[in-house]
Image (cartoon, rainbow, N blue to C red; front, side, top):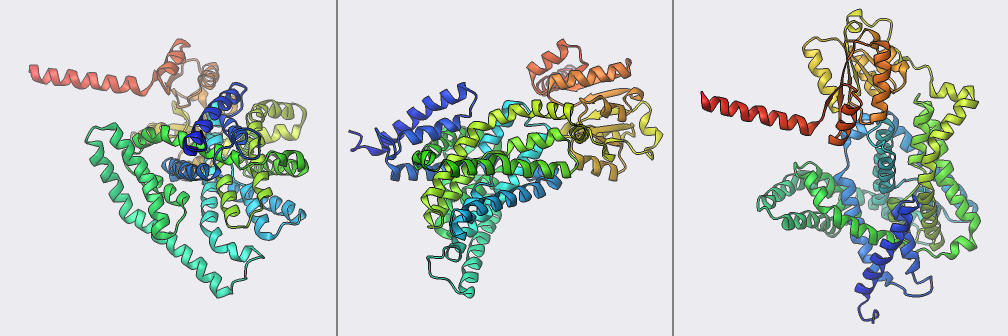
Amino acid sequence: MHADIPLIATIAAAFTLALAFGFMTEKIGIPALVGYLLAGIVISPATPGFAGDLHIAGQLSEIGVMLLMFGVGLHFSIKDLLRVKKIAIPGAVFQMAIATALGVGVATFWGWDIGAALVFGVSLSCASTVVLIKALERQGIIESMNGRIAVGWLVVEDLVTVIVLVLLPALASMLDPLREPQSGGSLLFDLGKTLLQVGGFIAAMLLVGKRLIPKLLWMIARTGSRELFTLAVITSAIGIAFGAALLFNVSFALGAFFAGVVLRESELSNRAAKESLPLQDAFSVLFFVSVGMLLDPRVLLENPGAVLAVVGIIVLGKSLAAIALVLLMRYPLNSALTIAASLAQIGEFSFILAGLGLSLGLLPKLGFSLIIAGAFISIALNPFIFRLVEPVCGWLCARSPRAKSLEQRQDPMAELPMSTERRFLQGQVVIVGYGVIGKTLADALLIRQIPFVVAEQNRESVEKLRSDGVAAVYGDAVEPAVLIQAHIADASLLVITANDPVAIGKMVETARTLNPEIGIMVDAEDFSTAQILEGAQLGQVFFSDRLVAEAMVKSIEQRYSDHAS
């Protein structure tokens, strides 16, 4: 019967098996994405039993790519990148260059031509946004300094990959030795035409889309219909992607990415992300299942050495490059290991790039299968690699003086300079964390001329604060040395904007040991965290819901008071 209704049969089989395998992989601590790929392998033509329709799966995966890239654009934040630009930009470029070079070297050794080797190498260099975010959330460090660096690093990788996706079709004739070589003028013409088309599309999005799309969403939002709003968001993603391909000859992926970037500027961006998430998730599952359908499992048996080399580049090559650069930038060993673990995998961008290389005739089918196999294994290994970060860091520090010095390195930013004026260090407020709340507090204290010292894990923020004449110290305030450098013994108040109750407890313990009379204020992420902090008597606890309610009560009281008078 399924031969007569291949669309329904393929979707039903894909979702059913994805649910089953995704549930099983999550239960054993492996990302569900591995289960989706496994579901695709089971229903692929290369395995016995039911075979899904590859043509239909391919078209469904295109929608998945659009919505996936739309989601990436919707969460793309220049501000997040700028906060860690000094480490994220050189780090991502350096790591991608090393991974690409390793991939090109291995592929050349196998006898592949330069076009196939380059596509192969670049595909191994870009980590998965989906896997990274979920791994950081699972570890509870997405808002930490290490988490911000990893996310900023990946944003740079995504941008570089988008540029490669744009330029690859124009460069295909030059990279493929079997095609007729183009003259230099013709190649430059194709590149110029591609860049002009992309530039025209970006200009249209910035000049027209940035104004038109948010206004249309506001009009639809005012109707009060949730279904219409969701439909409008999805139409924006797919419609702009299709229009970009039709009018500007730009890929679906790039069109959807910029649709998300433009929509992010709207005040309705959070609602748009929330409303479109279920459909994004559903088609993303189909995308990963369709990728799994393209994997021939025999590659694992027939080319174990090649698969091992690919996994080695992804897990070891990329990780060692990341560790080297993070340590070179004077960040501690723990940060280097955490960021390396975050990026020791590949995913959706690798599939998109490899798929484009395959369609252009640059990448052989074996190369595509090796990339999928490498992604499958690296994603499965990633949670276990994360769990090794703390034990490995502790083990190295306990046995190697060099490793211990890298973890607790002497950094000029970790100590307040001798030139710091005494007025900063007597009865001052110590602010831990220079995020939105920390910055707002610091600005208010500056205006009121109240002395304060900032303790922050972002080295760039500390450098900027010091250049502005603000007393600041670099490091994790969980370490007593950081609060000691902030002169906590002389402080009148400690304000903590961290979200980890365990870390907050350690900071409070250090502060009260060195200064029993110190006042303590803590920012709680949510009600449950506030209850934990209040129960442990860690200080005066603030959280947004309570503050909003208190402000409303005051406003109501004021209204009734005015009315009574």
